[in-house]
Amino acid sequence: MTLQQQIVGNAMQMAVCTLRPGQTVYCEAGKFLFKTANVSMETRLGGPGSRPAGGAGPGAGGGMGGLLRQAMGTAMQVGQRVLAGESLAFQYFTAAGGEGTVGFAGVLPGEMRALELNGSRAWFAEKDAFVAAEETVQFGIAFAGGRQGMSGGEGFILEKFTGTGTVIIAGSGNFIDLNPADFGGRIEVDTGCIVAFEDGIRYGVQRIGGLNRQGIMNAVFGGEGLSLATLEGDGQVILQSMTIEGLANALKKAQGGDKQGPTGGLFSTHVG
Image (cartoon, rainbow, N blue to C red; front, side):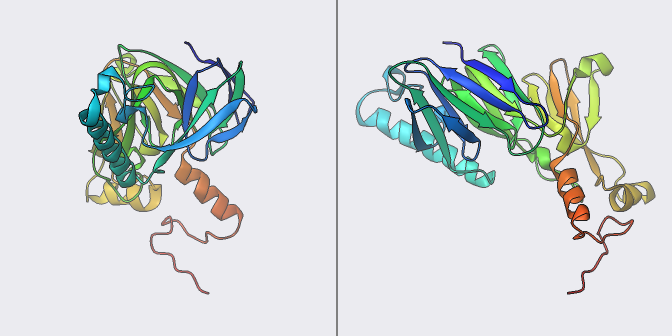
C-alpha cells in the first residue's frame, strides 16, 4: 500500500500521513506531532531492519531459532544506534477501524520530502535527516568513516533505507538537488550540507589543505576545517542550504553568547 502523505507548511514544514486500516509507519523519537484517536502508538527497540515487516513470520524462521535471530538483529541495530548517538527506540503508528491521520516534522526550520523506494536502489540519509517511513522500508546504520578536520564531520554516520515504500526526510533551509554526473562526476561539499543520496553515489572525505598555510587559514579563519565531503557517481544528491552548526552559531551570536573573533572561537576565552 502506497503511503498517502502531504507535505504542508513553508518555513517549518510537516508531513501529514493518511493511514489505511492496518497500515503502519514508524518515526524516530521527537518527530511525532499529532494523530487521530484510531491510530495506535507503540514504542519499540529497533527498527524494521531488525526483523521482517509484520513481525516474525516465515522469513524469520520458526521456533526458538527465529526468535533468537530476531533478538540478535534488534540488539545489533540498537548497538549501532548507540554508537551513532541516536535514540534507542522507534515509535510505530497503526490505523484501526478506518483511515487514520498522523503528523510528523523535523526538528529545525526547513524543507521536507518524501522519497519513494521501489526496491531497486537504496537511499542513504544523514543521521538527523530521517523523519518517518512505512514499515515496509528497512532501516540500517552505515558508518561512512571517521570524523575529519577541526569542524564538520556531520556526514560521519549515515542511515540506510532499503525495501519498498515511502521515506520522509527533513533538512535545514532549502533543498538543493544535484547529480555529480552533471559536474564531471564529482562534487565537493561542506559535510554539514549533506541530507541524502541514492545508492551508487560514492561518499568520502578529502583534505583540502592539510597542515600547510592555506589549510590552517581555512580551518582557523574560514571555519571549514581541513576537509570536504566528496560525492562521486551518477545519482540524485540532496543538499541543504543551512547547516545545523551554522544555525547554532548564529543563535549563539544573536543571544550574545558567542564573543568569538576572527579565529572562529578557536583561541577565545570566556570570563565569568
